[in-house]
Length: 54
Length: 533
Image 1 (tube, rainbow over the protein chains, first blue to last red):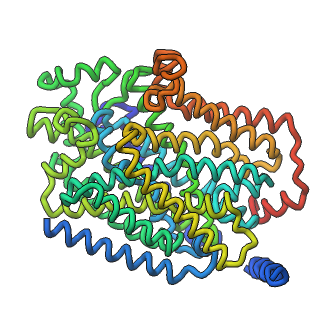
Image 2: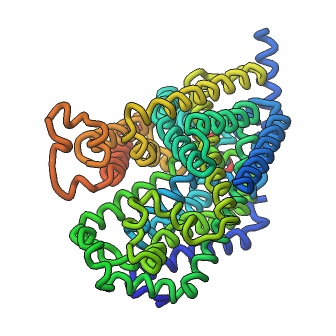
Image 3: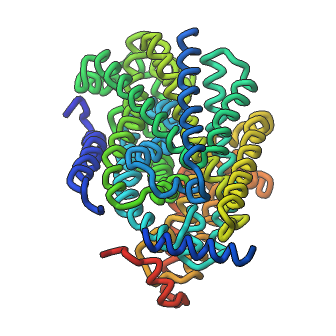
């Protein structure tokens, strides 16, 4: 197959291409899946603590 | 030569501009350490890939494929499936969310805060600070030697100029400067490697024809003498796996495939990339770019390295390693002998980009380990926090440049083992507790520390006394016992990560089962907020 007689090497070659395709398909399927105030509050609290220390 | 110089100057000009862009957009400590958590997915993916792939991955491992052939494609598979798909989907999303929940800005800080342990943060920071500079200087030395050979510049001058340029955009631009330039460098690498694989397959008559020629070469009587020594170690041809449990088999499976393929999951400079994006959507969008990028890097390097045997045989009647006088010379010789001059100039920039993108991320990781993990900047205002982070990066730069000048003169052999040593140490010490941090609420601080220490210790002991590649360089076994390794046999080619990672996993599980964690519910709730829903 593809000039590679050893099955395990052919499998490695196919899995390389296959896993890259898996990444591509996953990215396309999940493109819009998995779509701040707390962070702002935490940041403000920190700023206040620093100001108090100063 | 003029074309080469123009291309390098143009390339450096763009990198300099991107570094400046990073500097201009860096206003806070969070910007400097993790890119403000607002990095574009394409930039994140290319930065991850370009950091992952250094000059030695293309030239060094590509040349190694000249000896071991397509069996190295198992490493490419692990690089894509484990290093990108599993790393992003399984580790990346949880790392991003948990890192945000506990406000972690570095990999050691992430582990330390998750397990509520300053010791873990400091220990991980020390491991990075002590072992990463040697690995960084190895990449820097390789890149500088390549510049010396390609542009006929004195090695010391090449090293100095190279180091100053990389240092400038890391020091001023922080992670934004690093990632912007990484993305540009990754794009150049992708284009260069794409041209290379098309050219090589075309030259050999297409994909199947090229592979068939390589398969047939093994049985060609004209090379019987050249491969006789390799066959005694288990060599069965470039399109076949080495003989089961032979010297070559252990080298390929344990040192190359597992040593590099697994260790990558716990690399601090890569794990921190997950914390630079704002949502899981960005990680989803980064995965295709990362997967295809890695295929075009290591996949192409290994295929070209293996197929070079056919090209050298047709041209000179020699196999690749004989024609090039060693594995490191194979890829450069393929370029010089079989590719047009214009492409050699392009590939010079490709290899420069591969080196710079890896070094810049390493310097940033070492610098933040010093500035954030060893000298805590938490709670400091942004001005002070950025100053300490920059001083940390400055320390990393000075140490790395010093090592790059000093190592080749006093301990040249250390350069060859530094990459494997760092990958192995990180994998053994950090991987079990990193996985546990993301997926288990029950692993105690004691269990995490026990696993980390045992992984680190077993890894070091195996390198010092059992694994010939490191023990022959470290010379500690020779000093104490008067011989390179304390036991001789096939055990000497079993990679440290096989033993140390197993030990680390077992210790973590056993101690976790025997001890009860003491985190309050609030800590667990904070860590896992929004995870697994």
